[in-house]
Amino acid sequence: MTRTPSHRAEPAAGSQHLGLLFVGLMLSMLLAALNQTVLSTALPTIVGELDGVDEMLWVITAYILASTIMMPVYGKLGDLMGRKPLLLGAILVFMAGSVVGALAGTIEVLIAARAIQGLGGGGLIILSQAAIADVVPARERGKYMGVMGGVFAVSSVIGPLLGGFFTEGPGWRWAFWINIPLGLLALAGAVLFLKLPRHAGRPRLDIGGMALLAVATTCLVLFATWGGGKYAWTDPVILGLVAGTLVASAAFVAVERRTAEPIIPMHLFRERNFVLTTLAGLLTGVAMFGALGYLPTYLQMVFGVDATRSGLLMVPMMGTLLVTSVLSGRAVSRTGRYKWLPVAGSVIVAVAMGLLATLTSDQGVWHVCLYIAVLGLGLGLSMQVLVLIVQNTFPLRQVGTATAANNFFRQIGATLGSGVVGSVFAGRLADLLAERLPPAALEAGAGGANSLTPAVVASLPEALRNPVVTSYNDALTPIYLWIVPLALLAAALLCFVVEKPLATTVERDVQPEALAEGDLVVTADEPGDRRTGEAIRGTGDRETTGRETMSRESKGRDGDAGEPARAPGSLEPVPSTR
Image (cartoon, rainbow, N blue to C red):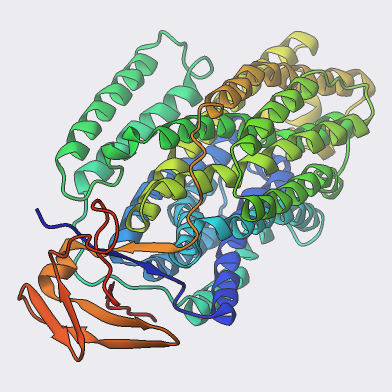
């Protein structure tokens, strides 16, 4: 049986090109990260003006759902056809959704706009993370991934501040319009700086897998969002969604086992580290988005702060996340050790959730700042390291697919977290308001519970405002206690991760198709000299260029019997950059 040779491939470009490439990727990640945070402080005002407080969770969930479905698609297509054209397309789709959101006149149009944004946003983070793996070895990747985690921290500070500024100044619609200049900047960075390999040939699309994945994910999210709120858990609609999730998931697995290019290959789940980090990522997603999605609203409604100040109050969490993300990434690159970081991070997240569950409406706001700073500490230690572990488990040609699959399940957790927490929060809030307020009091004083905004609550008489404030607090904080066991379970799972040595070079496998079609380059590695041969075009078993000769069936003669021979001339796919 013919064995596929492999070779060591250092980044083709120097440090200057790597720096420019990293800048291009950072711009794309910044666009996605800002979008996830800029609405947080503006959301109470947005849904109040559009008379959609009861649909608030869908403004968040619609984006997460759409981006979750698209993540495996972007990851697989990026491995098959190259990441740059997909990244450009994702930016354009995201910008289109932003225009629709800026012009939205109803809550339904706003939710649709968020879904369109998600169709593009699903590729921005995945393609950026996978592109770094194209050129940076795993051992050095830690510091880059740490900085990427820092992008989320910085954007999580800037985003709420921008959202508050727009809400109190030119209007909340600028939270969407701001994505247009940022998108153009990201497009320019991608066009000018991203010099990534392109893959020849026409990719085979897993249409059946994509459709079934979309159905299963949508049914699951609707189940989590509607169950116990809009519909009782035993309602036929909820039971139908459960059945739809199970049937679509089973059909998806069957299709993926047969198709030539599955978007989530089943062999990924044979890798222990992938399974453990994926489960831990899912649980972390539930905790993170369940906690963060409604904290700015909580701060505005319970503590009476304005939108801008509620953004400033998130700074302690983002500061600790930024510092620990960067420092942990550098520590991984320096020492090569990484297992303890996500374990410790998950335990700290559990502690933070327990602290948040103790909040009351008569405490000082500094309690919130302290507790979310602890949460940022835990997230900074774990988030990017989990991605690194996954990427270090698979060869480069599968990095995009594996990264996307891992992020897909993390986003499933995020969707479930925001959906379940939002549904339970909304249901508990409605019950508490009905219990604690006189009949028709809100209708007379504020135009209905669905039109409550921070400004409206602040203007209510004391007899009405206090019950509203305590209802918001008592509806949300107990939910955090339910998240504590999830974070502890994530820590327990990560204890069983096998700490494999991080690769110090970028290993690229020569594909069988390249060998068959002759799309190869022979490079000479001689002392003090490196020459690159011409591309070989042919179908014979042996081809030569100049002094270099290669064989498709070379065996390990100079090393161990189990290792393929590496001649002085090594085999590489023909590089094609843009």
